[in-house]
Length: 274
Ligand SMILES: Nc1ncnc2c1ncn2[C@@H]1O[C@H](COP(=O)(O)OP(=O)(O)OP(=O)(O)O)[C@@H](O)[C@H]1O
Ligand SMILES: [Mg+2]
Image 1 (cartoon, helix red, strand yellow):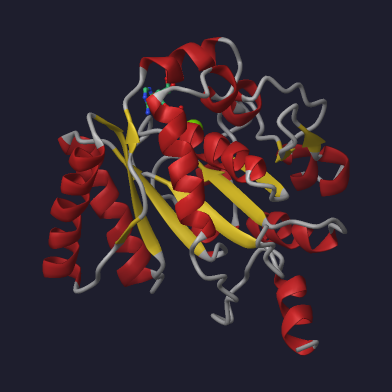
Image 2 (image 1 turned 90 degrees about the vertical axis):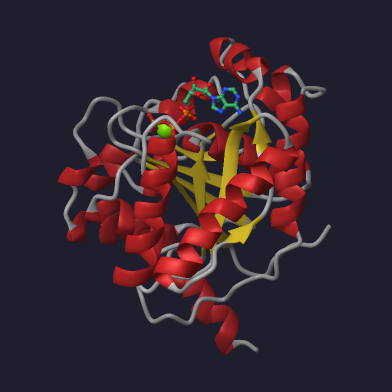
């Protein structure tokens, strides 16, 4: 087991809603956990507490209690039946766009107060490209953009990649084609989008793994389970295990961007003890 020395933080966004951010986030978290890692999942969507429902968990408190100061992050964290440490999102609270920079900083810095081993933190952000979404994505080491092979999803993924790369100077952007017909279709979708990014933005995005469209993903959701738990032999489960393996093979990044990052203090501690 290749344990990382400091948490690797992955932000999952899509631009367009419904592309599969939450599905990818929860199943990636579960698949990384199955590989023996300590995994934390932050549901940074304040509109709907989707991750919690999709994992069949019931949390008394959520991210909104950390934001209003009534609970610490430690008090809000729950462990799901899959062993994932979940920071539940708030339900119907308000739009994530309503969060100001101070509140986002509060949330990100709260992770510095945690005293438990974490190999991976997966951050499931809200749809859109609101400043709050971009701030969360900037605080991660890697950014996964979930896209479906539909014109509006592709256009919004491109828009997201554009603001992240040009306005925010963010790199380490990976495309996760979701609901595709085959791995080959996933690669084609990646090539098309990457060509546009190269031509118009002068950047290239990376490819990791595509996720097939699979009816069992929907069935799993109806049973409040991850597809990996509900149907381990399904095509989607195979792809999520493949995605987790690809993630595991990436070299650990220690961000030196000087920006606000999740687990900043741990990173500083690791570098100062080297
Ligand atoms: N690979 C897949 N195969 C089949 N259905 C899928 C797949 N991925 C996601 N879905 C379904 O698509 C719907 C939207 O997925 P999900 O909730 O993960 O998207 P989202 O990007 O998180 O949406 P939102 O923007 O509302 O947060 C859900 O019903 C989910 O079960
Ligand atoms: Mg979602």
